[in-house]
Image (cartoon, rainbow, N blue to C red):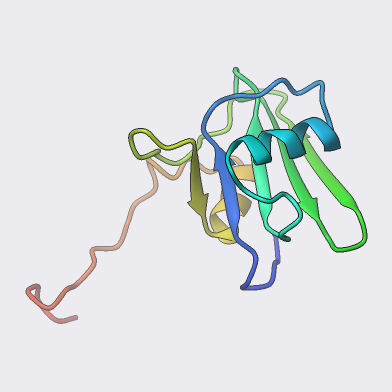
Length: 119
């Protein structure tokens, strides 16, 4: 399982990228999203077929690129708001995506609000 500090955020790029690139080209993709690739957050990219995922991370001493290629199936990414170039998810959600969990089919607990019944 993926364990990260609570200050780390995870951003998933909506558009697929050319996966032949590595540190510099992925950093350029982050800059195109008007973000700073050296801010310590995770930036996630997939290819067009969603069978390859790369995660770019800067740990204050250098660049890290983590990659995972699926032998079968595709990565199931979360729903993206219209017009967004990236979507922010919790680190725990990234761990589930990397493990192949399809969150769109996962049963969800009903949320109780001030107008709903109490548990």
